[in-house]
Image (cartoon, rainbow, N blue to C red):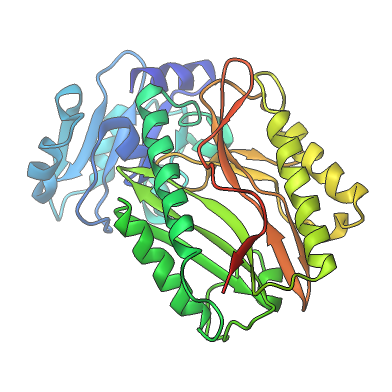
Length: 359
C-alpha cells in the first residue's frame, strides 16, 4: 500500500480508489464474500493511513483481512450515504486512479459527492502497479506453470478422436484441479476449423482423426495464474501445411523469447514475433497481440502489443503466444509464460514445443 501510494504521487495523482477484486486482494488481502451494490473501497492518499470503507454488516470480515492492521476501517450502515463517509478522505479537486473493475454506480456516486475531482482507470495511470513480481510471486507463478505443464502431459494420454471438444475440455479442467489448481479459468479446445478462432469455446463438435487441435488452458493455483497453449494433431498423418505452419509459429515463439531482456520494449517483442510469421507468408493470419501480463489474474498489464513502449523490467511476467489462424481450416498457437531476469528470460512452461501427437 505504501508503494502504491508513492507510485500514485509520482504519477501526479492525489491518491487511489481500490475496488473489490484483484487490486484490493493484492494491496490489502481483503476479498469480500460478496461484491454487491454496497460501497466497499480502499482509499490510498499520501500523508494519511490507508482507509478501507466497508458496509457495517461486513466489518467483521474486513477485520480478518491480512492487511487490516495497516488500515483505518470506516463503516457505514444501510440508510446512510456511503459517499458522505468517503468524502473527507478526498481532496475536493484531486485527481485519483480508480480500479478498472469499480462499479459504475460507485464511480458516479463519488463524482456526485466530489464534483471537482477527477478519476482515471488504474490501467491508464498506473499500468505497472502489479506488473513486477517479487520472489514469492515468482515462485507461485512457476508452480502454477508447472501444474499446467503436468496437465498437458496428462491430456496427451487422453483419447481425442470420436469425442466432443467439451469432453476433452472437461478432462483438461479435471487435470488442472488434480495438479493443484483451485480455479479453472478456461479450457479452449479448438479442433479442425474451430482452431482458427483464437478464443473458441469448446463445443459439441466431434473431434476426428486428421484434425489439428489448439489447447489453451489455465487458472489459479495458490492465488496466481497459469496460461499455456500447445497444438496437437490427431492421428499419425500430419499434412505438410500443418507442419509448415506449426514450425513457423514455433520459430516465432522461440525468436521472441530469445529477445526478452531488460530494457527491450513490450512492442518490440510483438514486432519480432510478427516479423517471423510475416516473412513466412502468414502475417495476415496472426490476428492478436503477442502476449499479456499474468499474476493474480490471468490477463493484466503489461501487454506485448504495437504501441506499448513500456520497457521490460526484471520480475515482469507475461505470455508469449504467437499464432496463425486459417479460417475454415485450422489454427496453431504456442504459448509459454515468461519472466524477465537480469539478463534475459525464463520460461514457466517447459513442455515440448513440437506438434503434439494424440490418438
